[in-house]
Image (cartoon, rainbow, N blue to C red; front, side, top):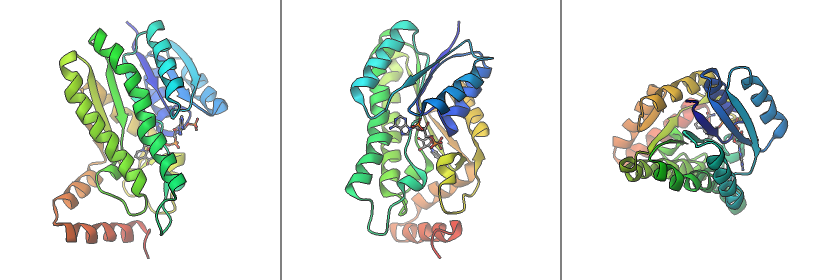
Length: 258
Ligand SMILES: NC(=O)c1ccc[n+]([C@@H]2O[C@H](COP(=O)([O-])OP(=O)(O)OC[C@H]3O[C@@H](n4cnc5c(N)ncnc54)[C@H](OP(=O)(O)O)[C@@H]3O)[C@@H](O)[C@H]2O)c1
C-alpha cells in the first residue's frame, strides 16, 4: 500500500527536502505552499520516484481553507503522515531591541502556532476514526529556551512542542501517532537570513533523513543535533540567574552580541 504523506511548507528548505526524501521511498505526496513556481519545481523533482504528487496553494493561517483542503484530501486518499512544517522565522522573525511590534508578533504566532493548529486539528477527527496515522509537528531548539533575539518565535515553537506532546498522549489510545521535531540550525533560506554564526548546522537533506528515521521509529521527540540539545537542556538545569548569563554567553558565541 502506498503511504500518503502531506507536507506544509513544501516549497522551500526542510519541507522540500522531506518531500524529496519521501518521493525516493515511492510515497504519494500532497505538497502545500504559497509560492507556486517554487512548489511546482519541488513537485517536478519528486515526480520520477513518487507514486503520486499533487500541489495545494493554501495559506496555513486560513483555518477555513485548511480545514476544507484536509477534508478533501482525506476523502480522496486517506492520510498516513501529516507534517506541519510551514513556519515563519529567520531574519523575518528577529525582534528589534524594543521587542517585536504587535503586527510582527501576531504574524509569527499566526503562522507558527495557529498555522500548525489549522493543519493538524482538521485531521485528528478522521485519523482517530480510522485508528491510524502519524502527525509530525516541526518545533525548534529555539523553543527549549527563550531566545532574546526572537521571543515570539521561541514562544511559538515551545507552544507547538507542548501541543504535540499533549496530542501524543491524547491520541495514542486511538492508534494515532504524534512526533515533535526539535531541530537546531538547518541550512535553508530561513536560517541563511540570520545575521549570525549558526553552530552545528545540518543540511536539509541530513535533517530530512533523520526525521524520516524518527517517524519510522515513532520517536516522541526527534531532536538534533545532540550538541545544541545537550547545551539547551543543561542550561535549563541551571539556577535562573545563571541561565540568563549562559544565554548571554551563547549570544557572544554566535556573534549576535559584541
Ligand atoms: N532552518 C532552520 O534552521 C530551522 C531550525 C529549527 C526549526 N525550523 C523550522 O522548520 C520549518 C521549515 O523551515 P525552513 O527552514 O525550511 O524555512 P523556509 O525555507 O523559509 O521555508 C518555510 C516554508 O514555510 C512556508 N510558509 C511560510 N509561511 C506560510 C504561510 N503563511 N502559509 C503557508 N506556508 C507558509 C513557506 O511557503 P511559501 O514560501 O510557499 O510561502 C516555505 O515553504 C519551520 O517551521 C521552521 O521554523 C527551521
